[in-house]
Amino acid sequence: MHPEREGPRGRRPPGVPPPRPPVRAVLPAGLPARLRIRCRHRGENLFLWPASIGRAVLLKRGAEAELRRTKYLGRDAVEKSRVPKGYRLPALDEALRRARIRTEAKLIGEARAAGVSVPILYDIDLVENRLVMEFVDVPTAKAVLEAGGKKADDVCRKIGEAIARLHRADIVHGDLTTSNMILRDGKLVLIDFSLGERTSRVESKGVDLRLLKEALTSAHARGPEHFEAVARVYRRGYAGGAAVLAKAKEIEERGRYT
Image (tube, rainbow, N blue to C red; front, top):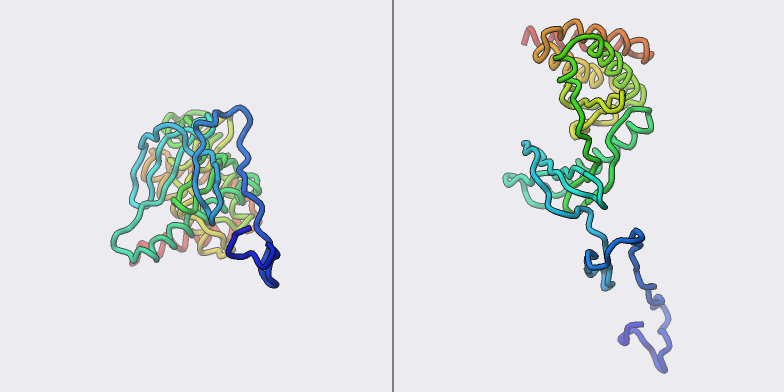
């Protein structure tokens, strides 16, 4: 009990709440105590295990985020942090980056619940505005499609199935390129939901497919053929697929005359 809150003979005055119990962080068994971090939060001593252990190595720097390879409790991991924007008011910039990190983390969880393979999310840090996810060192769908053969046909089928599951759950990825699709143990894993959103709008889902078609036709010699294979599977897997594909075609035609 704080001395200033004590009444006569140590009794608590009316209306003064009892002291909070001490806050203790639960650490995984067997971890060396010397690696714990001591900090203060609301007057309490906290001992926390750091999310990233070891030096983080920059993998990619984009306009909105930076990716670093690191360790999380001994596991290979990727740390994704939102880049501050100097042209925005600091308070607005902080709020936007935090909201986008929170949205991306939520979409990853919802995509997994919808049956889509996504990276395992280890940690969400809304103070530093970053996510820590498993590191997956496997080929991208882009590399497999470029190689061609039967594997390319199988990848197109898996792309169609994954997008159908997303759109059935009213999840729009926002950046459906073959570089944001990786293949692990025979499964297609979708990554980078930073431009995604939850919406039932056919227009938004049509934009998703339009972006995929553009990515396929611009980066792959058999791009149009690949997209048709994706579209066939997508239409079978999603009841609203025909309407979304029609909207994607409409969006494409709009672009030709603007």
